[in-house]
Image 1 (cartoon, rainbow, N blue to C red):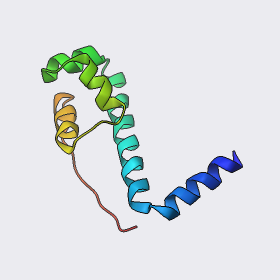
Image 2 (image 1 turned 90 degrees about the horizontal axis):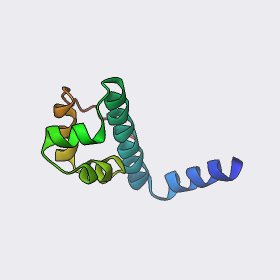
Image 3 (image 1 turned 135 degrees about the vertical axis):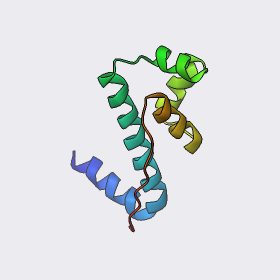
Image 4 (image 1 turned 30 degrees about the horizontal axis):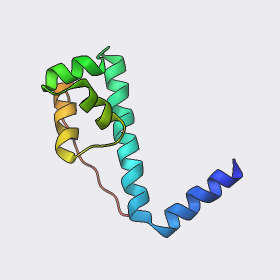
Length: 88
């Protein structure tokens, strides 16, 4: 576990912008998955709602997201996105 923590700290220090981007993508996909689970919406159902293929949803949930895709996904789940920024 200590090696992992050391690796994380090194990555954060060496490229904080890339680190924050990846953390934000992970947080976003986790939130999408939480909402899908709580509303009992499958990848297939979300794909149908969005008019895309199920494999496209799988790619998005693997982190292949554009900002537009994030907005569309949340909208099709019945939510709007509010952005909060903070200095790092």
